[in-house]
Image 1 (cartoon, each protein chain N blue to C red):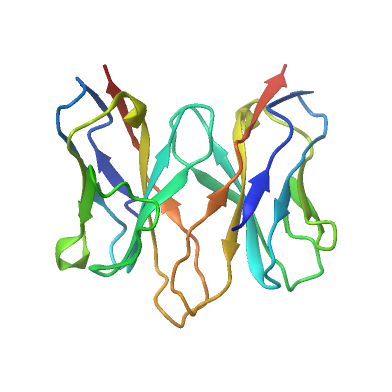
Image 2: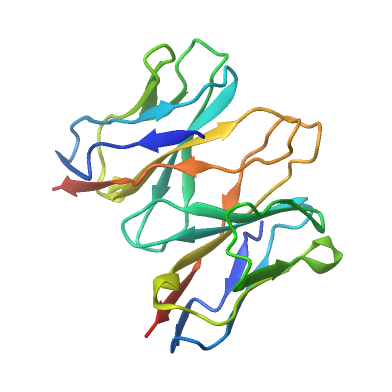
Length: 117
Length: 118
């Protein structure tokens, strides 16, 4: 079975530039998550989608970060403009969970390592 | 807000020996899930084991088992017969079981780096 696909694997940009990450979840998974993992820390949720609707974006820095999940399948996360502190691994995950269902297992992609110089 | 604390930044174990990784958490909820994830250098988070808070029996998955102490808010991971492939970062994580908000975010600790010595 195909897993969660993310691209690119690595990205180096200068501060104030823009960058976009792409995620394709496991087929049929209703829920998609974007996590930010800064070096030496555990991942932190940025945004959660249920199909193409946003469920939780309370920790998303909305002045510079945006995300969309058109048609409820793949998703893009954008940073504009980037800051040095945005250097991190950006992990995408997906799960079958839909409202009212018992929570199901989240599957993670291999992430995108972003370096802002 | 829920918090997860892993007090051991690094641990090491000899191959075939047993090691225990510690995790404590803070929550006011009565129903929730706890997880241990493994993150190898490939960066992909892999679920190792899951525990539902309402279950008193400790979860077990082959060589991996947990010691869940709900009153103490403690959730440790025991790895038996350690193998070289177990070397990785291990993260403890919490997730609310509430379905009312719909948010199913995982709250992670800072991780423990496990080294397995041959």
